Length: 225
Image (cartoon, helix red, strand yellow):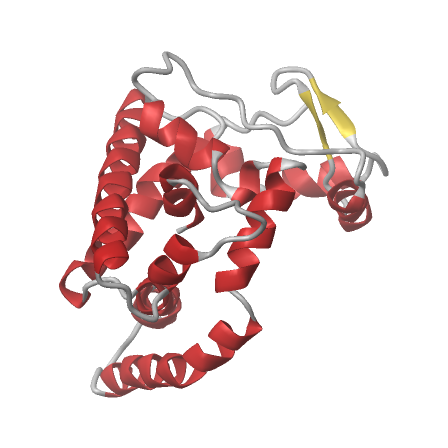
């Protein structure tokens, strides 16, 4: 069975994944305690099966992982009905097709600015110079993140997703906890400021959405960002 901690697998996982697909069905991984669905057909079936769900398991000790845990458990991505239904209904009022369409000119401008910077270089890295910064800039624009603090977003995200690896180091765990707390505190402060002086950004809109008397609480709003 695949050893996801094997340096050879980490360097080149494709032969191992190809072998996994030869089984023709999801395979039980004893160490991970779950089935691995390596074929597109199986992964698609799993994702579309409404009898299957996603339940976030809090990391322990919970006092050390407090911010990290609620950023996930109160996120629409880690919720199941009825909580997911409620969150999705509220978020959809603020984050919808109209908002995305309205952001299009700004995305085009951000894209052109990156391309203009690339044009000035003799050599460039398409990932580092374009593919990585563009989504960060779009998210920053969506949230109306202060330009001078935009650089914080990607390091926070990178540190948090280190916990999605099979065997994160103690250093990575500490970094994820720190990033989660810093991100939560920063967005909380933005939320408080936008409630006092709302704008047209997503944070301002999420702060005021309401349906049938329901509103997003502070943790849910921050986790949505």
